[in-house]
Image (cartoon, rainbow, N blue to C red):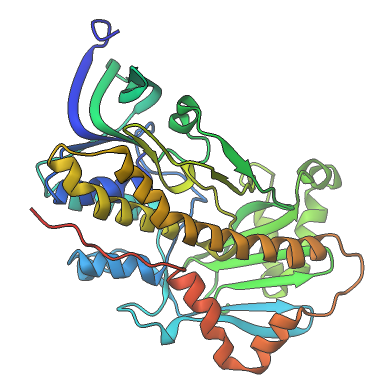
Length: 409
């Protein structure tokens, strides 16, 4: 097979997937002097309705890398709080202004801008390579150990030999599938229809979530437009399509009355994209010389918008634990086990909270035909403002925030 490949490379670490986890890990390893290549199957990062929320924990990492000021020059929207409405009860879900971080807000930034910025910073280090339009197709194994990846590029087949292969290629990960790693599925009662509506200066500023009879609606302020999420019962998209676009527009207008004069912008179903929600987790994240992180190790619910930030925390922890063993050529399976030991607990805790919200609130609302009383947690947050700090900490920092410990070589 090596003779058939049009290109053969050798590096210390090969990363499949140029998303937030893969790109951050590549940057951190190269900064620590580890030769690394990131393989991204697309030719650019321009895909809409990807996670665009960057939480205080992520911006703290940018600060620790010394690039926060430069990073914040990119276009973004600052969100110091998240609001909600359950029936007639209006409340603030989370207030980030009390967090002990450089940035006490969530930043909404197109993911392509974020990833391009990571590529730019990574390019400062000679050990960093990114290959676009390189789709990983298989693992290369030798006597039970993974020793590299095969990929297809615009120029032909490619082989990358590496001391470590990292799967950061998302919830449909080729790496974890080829590695035979077993997945535990937790299910989800909902899917989400994502679309845009124009935004006017007189509109509200803060993002909001609206819970009503049988419906949940999310609106995220993206400066000149609203990114809207219409939450539907799992597998009910065909039923909604059968009811027709006018009925869908009427539902949106009722959930967001201030935008009722704009629902005509939805002229057909094409710009309304389906996000299929899944929540899962690998039993074991590693094999000999192979590790999965981010969505490849644990697909998260969109509840709280924490998926990107959890994936980035995985990348930071991975670099902290593996950079020196990789650079010195003494990486062992025990080192990979330590990564899972470090990141499994915050992953489980985050998913536990998400599943609780899915099953106790979202599932009940989507299945309701009459108005429900607001959950006790929402009533308490509305009555006692200091309680907003707890969800702000869980969303903004997570259960085990990571800090950059790798050296800059």
